[in-house]
Amino acid sequence: MKNSHLIKLSLCALFALPSCSTPGTVQDISPWVRPSPGLQQQIDRRARRLPWTHGVERMELVRWFAETGEPAYPALLELCMDLRPDVAGSALGALGATGDAALIPALHELPWPNIEDVELRLERARALLRLGDYSMVPHLIDGLEHDRLMVRALCAQSLFEESHDRFGYVPGGPKGDRDVAVERWREWWSKLSAPREAEGLARADLQ
Image (cartoon, rainbow, N blue to C red; front, side, top):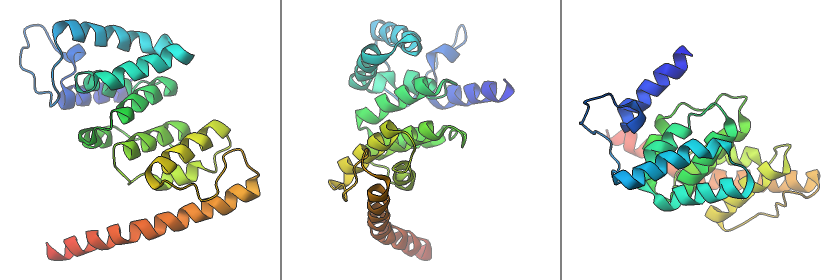
């Protein structure tokens, strides 16, 4: 409970969430575009409803948040810290769907999910990749070996959207064939990441 309270305070400081304001507080330090009062009411109402939705209704809410964009970021970032993995995952999905690279630092500020929350960690990695951050690609490649077909399929789709190649990987295919394809993915990432690492070292030498 103490850690949850500290995280809540940290998010208040970073994103100036409306729910964290105190009576008489008028200063807004949020980096995001503020919604109109009417839109704020819609955001708050949908944010409260999202944890209790399922299936198509949940998907429609995620789409609405993604289309609303920047004014909904504070509410979505707060939902990313929900203790229910499916709720946090939906918020991450909405943020990733915006394609707004400005969200990358904010997502990195959030505490990384516990190692046990493998699917939530992969959802965070998927969101970052959709926003243009390749740092979590190794997590997605590992996700191709996940026990659940849906998780494998989501990871494969995210990687395909960025690479435009599948390397013969079929989420529902025989394990032996998947293993061969995963090695191809790892080779692809090794070749792609090497120049980036070299560039980073060069920059470090110049400083």
